[in-house]
Image 1 (tube, each protein chain N blue to C red):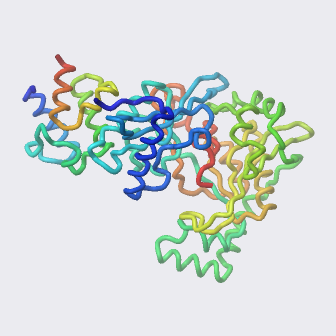
Image 2 (cartoon, rainbow over the protein chains, first blue to last red):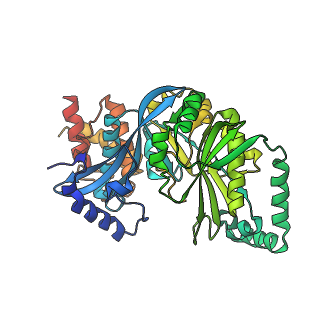
Image 3 (tube, one colour):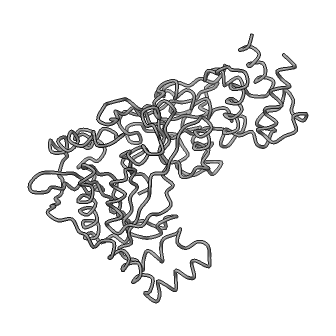
Length: 364
Length: 79
C-alpha cells in the first residue's frame, strides 16, 4: 500500500511516537518531532496531518486555519507548520516533504509559513522552488545592560577575534558606555500623554482597538479579544499584558515576555525581554513600543528584542533606541496568497507580523 | 517502460543531482544518489512538470521512489 496523508487520530499515537523516536535516535534537533498531545502542543484551529505507509508514520505537518484581514477584508489563510519527514534521516523517504507540501496546498492554496531560521533551511528552499515569496521579518534589539549583553550575546562573540574585542570593550566599560550613548541619543523624542496599565483580560476594549485599526494593515491575523484570550490567557503568568491609553481612550496593547535564559545559543544567560505581540493604529505604534520598553526596563531585563513586519512598528522601535539585527524569522507566502499582496516588494513592509504569529512565542 | 522518457528523466535528474546522466539508471534512487534529498526531489517534480506540461497529484508522488518509477509515472500521464 502506498503513502497516504490523513488527519491524525488517536489510533496513530503509537506510530507517531515511534516516528519521533526514530528522529531522536538520529540526533535531530529536539523540535524536529511531531506533536504527541494536540491539546497542549497545538494552537487553536490546528490540525495534524500524518503521512502513513504500511502502518508506519513517515512524516507529518500541522495546518492551522486562521482568519486574516487584508486591508480590512477577511480571508481565510492557513499556516503550514512543523513539516517533519522521515526523509531527514532516511533518504528512501525523500519524497515525503514534497508530497506533504503539495497536499497542504491542495487543502488550502492560501498558505503561509513563518520562522524557518534561514533561507537555507530545507523548508525555505522547497518553498522558494515552489515560487513562494519570502522575506525576513525585521529583528530589532536594545541593550538595557550593555556590559552583560556584550558578554552573553552569542552572535556578537563570533568569531574569536570579535570575542576578544567585545570582552575588552565590556571589561573597560567603553563598549557599554558607547552603546548606551547611541541608544540614548536615539531616544530623545519621548511620546507624551500615554498611560499603560496591566491589561487584566482582553475585553471589549481590545475589540474596539481591533475594529478601529485592522484596515490599516495590508495583512493581519485576527486579533480580537476572544483570539487574544486564547493565545495569551490570563492564567499563563509568563505573559505581561499591557493596555495603553491616551486621554482616557485605549489606543493599543502589547504582550511581553520576561524570560531568564539559560545557556541559550543566542542569548546566553541574559534576562530577555520580548515585545511578542502588539496592536494599535500605525500612528500610535510609538506610544505602545515606548510603554513596552518602559515596562521591560522596569522589570530589569538585560536585552529587549522584537520582530516586527510593519514599517510603522520597526520605526517605533528604532525611536526607542533599538538596533537592527540579522533576522532569521522568515515569512513565506504561497503564490495564491501573494495575489493579495502585490507588489510583494512593497507589501512586505505593510504586513502586521510578529512573534505572536505563526507558532507563537516559542524559544523565548 | 518508455526508454525515451527514461533517458530524458535521467538527463533532467543528472542536471539537478550533478551526476553524469549515463551513470543514472531506472534503479537509481535517493539512497544511492548523494544529492537526491527532499528539496531536490521537489525540484525534480517541478522540472518534470515544466518539461512535460503535466501536474503530479500528491498521491501520485509516492510512486516516485526511483527514476524508473518516475519515468513510468510520466509516461502514464502522457498517454
